[in-house]
Image 1 (cartoon, helix red, strand yellow):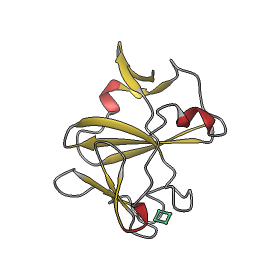
Image 2 (cartoon, helix red, strand yellow; image 1 turned 120 degrees about the horizontal axis):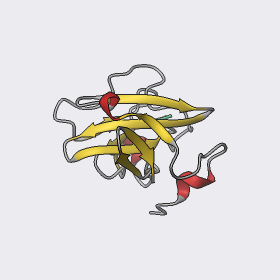
Image 3 (cartoon, rainbow, N blue to C red; image 1 turned 90 degrees about the vertical axis):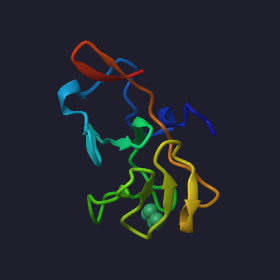
Image 4 (cartoon, rainbow, N blue to C red; image 1 turned 90 degrees about the horizontal axis):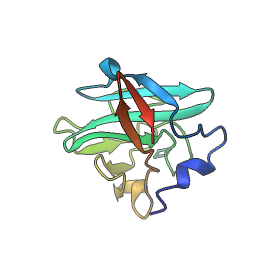
Amino acid sequence: MNRDAWRDFPGAPPPGTVLCPAAAIPEKGVKSLDLDGFPVLLVASAEGLRAYVNACPHQYLPLDWRSPNILSENAEILRCSNHDAGFDAATGQGIDGLGQGCALDPVPVTIRGDALVIG
Ligand code: FES
């Protein structure tokens, strides 16, 4: 997996860009963000917070295009709402359906002060 692939998406913001206030980090489920056209998906996975480019590698549609309910009850599997591709919520690796053989592109995030930032 190329951990810097997110930088190749159009409009990828520079490290240090604020994603949201720390208080807005989801404790359950997912949260979609649009940073001037750069789509980010925050995921409260079973192994902690993860962030991915919100572009399913099948057709590069947002995973939550058709429904916001894309994280399994146990917070281990992300299921694209478009054509059901399954991804490991903690790693982004495709695990079934159209997700097999591909992966979501992780976005590195960290809490800095009272904000969640890229980097
Ligand atoms: S766009 Fe996600 S499975 Fe088709």
